[in-house]
Image 1 (cartoon, rainbow, N blue to C red):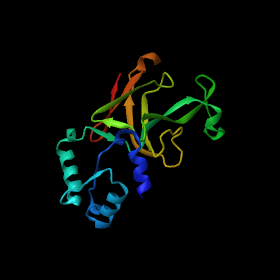
Image 2 (cartoon, rainbow, N blue to C red):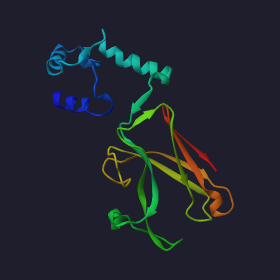
Image 3 (cartoon, rainbow, N blue to C red):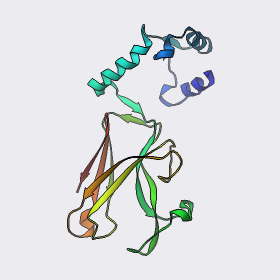
Image 4 (cartoon, rainbow, N blue to C red):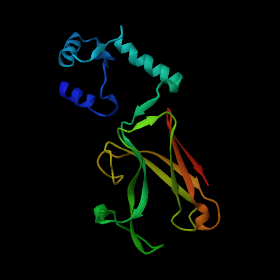
Length: 196
């Protein structure tokens, strides 16, 4: 739809664009090309000789040398599940009693690393600190999720999907000595690192 393209052209980084690149299978469609030049006369339509091949070639170039793409837009919101003090908007079904401090917690909160639509530079790094809940805890388990929403509050909302798990063994010692830093980098894959 022309209205959807017009809305996109008014937003963020593409505002003020002078060119419209047409790649992929539909790039060869004369009907689509005519439609776009009619509805967007202010834009120059750029079509490679083989539009379908342009997609494959771009994927291969990115696989060989990821630095050919300077920045990407996140298709999803990425994050992890964390335990936070329970609040009314968490709902009673998510209320969990924590005997360590005798308070109620919500252990299905979504801690956001990257939001849907956010620009992600190559090798972008997000850091968060985590602490064990009890002194005798021997490991911290991180559950990573995606969401189609920009601001998910809980990991069990519609569309949220678990994409990975990382387990970190904790050293012996005092609770305050067991804090770790989670470091996730976005290159050609999401990689998690921990620093004690």
